[in-house]
Image (cartoon, rainbow, N blue to C red; front, side, top):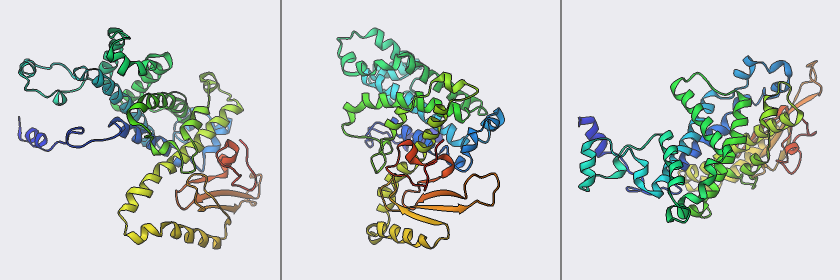
Length: 377
């Protein structure tokens, strides 16, 4: 063992031994995945409506102008893949810890294990494909009346249904393209179709299968502060692969794609709330914490002086009266149909959209219209 190996061995941290994490560690990867998925559309807010134009739907535009934040696209796919991989190993570990490791890598490992001198948790775990293969064998090996099957495996039978299997297989393919090539990403249509129609439904089923382990726990970004069920809304969106592959997309397809865009923006802001509400504020001086809402209110009221100000509204994401609608005179632009363009911004949670992607009210994501006229796709 060289000095660096010795240094790292003495200074590593073992989750589950040195400290506990609840829920299981793989949910941290899920947090990263959703965070990056939610922010993948932030660079498209001013131009996303152009994708609706047939002339803009060529390979170059879809590859560059409408691919979103490429870093966020990459990191979300890697995050979802890591979540699935760690979850597979989590299931295997519950069946038998030995199923998660390369058992055994050397003759020395064999004798150390036989002499009870080795810690299974210090052995190298199997890779993704091997973990998937071992889990598949578990379902064949263990009788349905066995404790292993009843207590662990039974709740995860759906992992080997066709839809789940295809999702896992394609997620692994994208992971490999990103990690081993780095130059290939899905465009916005393929990306949002894959995440909304395959990945999120699978994640939801895994989370529901895990509920018995974590009680009432739910990731904070699954719902907004106003109780908009983001996962539930994603699951309501149904896009067929046939429609996604058509050169001429249906109106329903575009409606669904724009709704996904709105859900990602709500998710981006809902994700931030736990940090604004707990982590950041906990580090501020007490009077700042107590007066936070008052400060936001004062700032919001001061915006009435802005020449573009239209109204103050209750934010449909965080619930505070801190969402301001603005407008800009565009009557001098010959090809624009209306005299004004509108946008809104919440000064608490940062929920921000323009009227180019329609009003949240159109998609059932706001109780009232935020813009003077509810634009339709």
